[in-house]
Every structure is written in C-alpha cells, then in structure tokens.
Length: 549
Image (cartoon, rainbow, N blue to C red; front, side, top):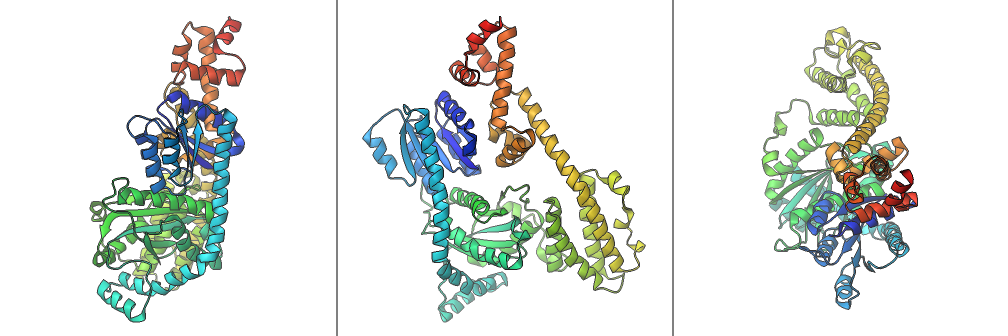
C-alpha cells in the first residue's frame, strides 16, 4: 500500500481527486487530505507519505515552500505539483526540488491517474536500486560499523569519551560518528517478522540495518548502530542539518527520518519496529547514563508494534528522570530483559517468540534445586504477574478456570520442584494462547462494528482515515486493512455508500435542497455531491428525486 496526500485550499479539488483514486482498487492507495500547508506538514510529521499532490498557489504557506520542507524531511517522497497556471517561473522553481513532477489542473482524469502511476513505478524502481546499491556498498559500510562496535560499546561500559578517542587514534579507526560533536539517541526494537527468522537471518538483519539507515539519511548526516539486547539496537545520530536552518529544526528532521525508517523496515526488511526517540541533544559524557535509562524504558515501557504496524515514541528529559534507576532492579539484567521480551511477545500474540523466551526462563528455573531460591522465585512470580495481568485485562478468568487451575500462579507451594512449575507455566500459556486466538477474531469484528457505528452517527462530519485512526487509537494503515479484510469493502467506499444511501432517503422523503442534503451527508459542496452521485448512480440527485416522486 502507498500513502497519497492531496493538498489544496479548494475543498472540491481535494474531494474530486480523492474520489478518483478511491475508485481505482488496483493502485492500493491510502488517501489522505489536507486543505492548508500547515495541515499537510502536521500530518506528515505523524505519518510518512509516499506521494504528495500539492497545489502551488495556496494562502499562507504556498506549495513551493511546503515542497521544499517535504523534500528536506522526506527525500524519498514524490511530489506532484498542481496549478492552474502554465508559467515557466513555477516550473523552474519546482524543478529544483528532488522527485518532482508538474501538472495543470486542467488535465483530464486519466492524465492525473497516470502521473500517480508513474510515481508508484518510480518508488518501485527506487526499491530495486536500493537493493543493488546495498549490495555494492555493503562491504565497506559494514566493515566500518563492525570495526567501531567494540570501541563504542566501551561508552556503554562507562568509559570516558577521551579514553575512547585515545584508543580510536591509536588504532586508526575510521569512526562513522564524531566524538567531538553532540549526539541524539534512538532505540529500535524489532517486534515482528525478524523473530521468526533463523539465527543466521537475524545476523543478516543486524548487517542490513546500517545499510538501510545510510540509505535514508543525507550524506552530511553521521550515525552509528550498537546492538543493545535481544532485538534491541541503539541508534546514535548526528544530523547534518544546521541548527540555524529555518526550514526544518533538528527535532522535526529526526521525527521525519525515524518515521521513514519504520516505513522502510516494513517494505525492505519485512519486519515491524517500535522506536524510542529521545529528543534531547547530548554531550558524549552524558550518553552512558542516558542510554541505560533509555534501554530500561525501551524494554519495559516502549509500545509494541502490533498487527503489522510500527510505532514511534518520543521522550523528553523530564519523562526520563521519572524512571527507576537500573541498578535498583533485583533480577539479573539477562533475566530482566527476557521477562520484558516475554511480556512483549504476549502483547503481540506472538506465540513462537513467547515460548522461545519462556523456555529460556524455565531453563533458569530448572537449574535451581532449592524451592527457596530467591532468584528463581522472583522469576516465577514475575512470569505469573505477566500472565495474571493479561488474563485480567481481557477478562479471561472464567474461560481459563474451566481448563486449568489458576491459583498455582500465586501459590508456589503447590509445586515440589521448579521443573514442575515450569511444566505448569507452559500448560497455562498454551491454554492462554488458544483463548487469545478466539479473542483476537472477536476483537477485530468488534472494532469494525464500532467503526461502522461511529461512521453512521457522524455522516455529516469529516470522516478521513486519519481522523478515524486518531479517534480509535489505531494506525491508519491497520484500520484500512482490517476494515477491508473484515467487511469486504474499503472504508472510503463504505463511507461513500452510506452517505449516498442517506442522501437517497432525504431526496425521497424530504423537501430539503440539494445543497442542504450535501451538507447533511458530509459532502463539502453541492457540486461535489452531484459529481459523486452521478458517477456512482448514472443520474443526478435532482433526476433521482423526480423519478422517485
């Protein structure tokens, strides 16, 4: 699926273009709308767009200025400028930007559709070129990152930047990041896809990630990647963007490139990620303590990538200060990380990943002979707490109690050995995943029904995909995919059908004007309402009213 953003201050133009593309199913587009330049930029800060159709002449921020910001923040996005003016000056200014084409609003529908098809073909071509470039440049880039890993790991062991810099100069290591300049930190947590690969493939992913990031960033940016635990990576970034650049701040630029990374991981590496971006520039002497706290936050609190959708969380200094210090945690670091991963896999409904981690933890339990061992007891009770929390959250107590006793989750005295307790944890987990499977199906239908009810009650309001996603706290791509998969119809098509059905009722049973009916059914203008109505039904609203009466 590709995301198309249509930006124009004339609502009927946006609606017209939106309707055209909604009715071309083979293009598989997620369509987004904006009516001002600021709305477009705010939307793109939250969601990566692949293609932007952009009016050049708009009040406030004009299309050319928006295009410059988009090209800077999203260098891989394609922009199609729309204008009613065939003037060389506009074409010249637009042509200075990357990935730009130019269309007159007077062009016919087929010409506009073909231009978007061209953009999709170029995006596909870019993907192929990325694979070719990756193969060509991979060797040198990987060598650089592998050689510097041990030196940069010393930062995470508390070694001072001065000591590391001394070692770097001594061994003549060519770092990909500058130890004399401030740095920004970001943790990447691989949540879906990669955990199902074999070990060799996981190693391959670790090698692909630096290449992918290098592809996304600008040549003047610097970065380094460090493994930070199971499926966790620390990304250190030094943007080349000037802090005096009025076009885009460093914070905005980092938000854009992290969103780009999430999207590209899904398309190029077939995996989804959770990403934690710390929006405070750091001196190198502060990296050690901050990175440890961020790692703690990433393993315990970072939202998980669910149902094939990636997530980005931003964090500021005051939020980080609220975290518990890592040294106060009683469970050893390896077990603590596994427990966090276990909860993540349960929340993701990732059965194979969950049982792999549970097996590891149960091995630690079975290695202890005494039932009074505090380390083993704490691991068991933490696993129990995770299971109890999930069972309570989704109200599965009664269903589970019919199949297995639940009190053994909190009465360890029921077991004569840790091996017996490990068998119980495996049994109750198997039953829980069986319940989760039926629950997930119910939840999908429940969400679609909630969407349908909301749409029905708000037919006269704006019902964009992003608005629905924000209201229901889901990713827009997920809602679009889920609705079509469950309801058998695209959500935009469903909304249009419902609006036209309501319009037919009003045309037959009221004397309301066409303009009033258009407004009551969520169409911006009577002209757009009539256009959609005739396109769908072959006659105008007025003609339908005459026939019905």
